[in-house]
Length: 290
Image 1 (spheres, helix red, strand yellow):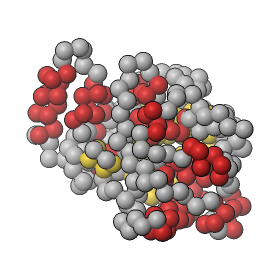
Image 2 (image 1 turned 90 degrees about the vertical axis):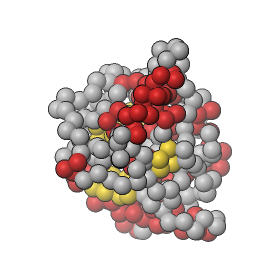
Image 3 (image 1 turned 90 degrees about the horizontal axis):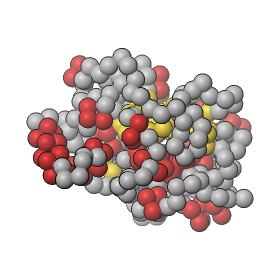
Image 4 (image 1 turned 180 degrees about the vertical axis):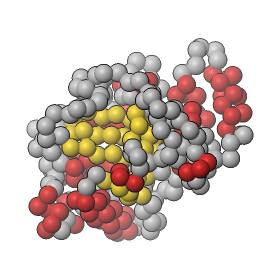
């Protein structure tokens, strides 16, 4: 966790060692930091009523960072480890369907938490990505496929070198249709992993957004589109298993096929499916795909 903290704080030149020592001192005195145990609600930090400030416009896509959103847009909130790489992977999906992305803190107790509070493990949040997209141009099924293939969902409360409840895997639904889609996709990816020889259990949590007073809080502005900004340190600890999610038609029920569809072809996934470190090394702009 310390390498990520040191990078996130962006200390002045020559102060990195001092920053790491101070951060270590803080973490070593907090039993929840890096822990796989969720805090109880009564243990959570109080937070604040005012949201953290973010830029008005997305650094890459040049669309608004906050709503109200154009008519017809849909929303997906997920968590799959360090949110820097998770967000970049989504904004790069092709076709102009990704309208806006944001990183933040999801599925916790503390209102409007700061990064420093989240890493203590005492807010209950996961590092997460909010996706606003046009379902006529890209399907929720496509975004879900990227979600599954871009990390190791069998890791519990962590991803690669990052450990703790903030790095858990999660999907948070806003409708009954989304719930059914998420659960069916989880079962499909579990079967794909098993077929590929990975016998570990998928640990992704699937919960209703309505379980929380507010499921997603925006993170600090310097975290937004971090990997696209000058001076960003290329870091992502995601652990793609390089196991393909089966095509939607192979696992979707007739009910799901009526509400959802996949728009990216198998040829796209054969060329652009997530691989270790591929997101960090990839260009900033969205993928061009006819």
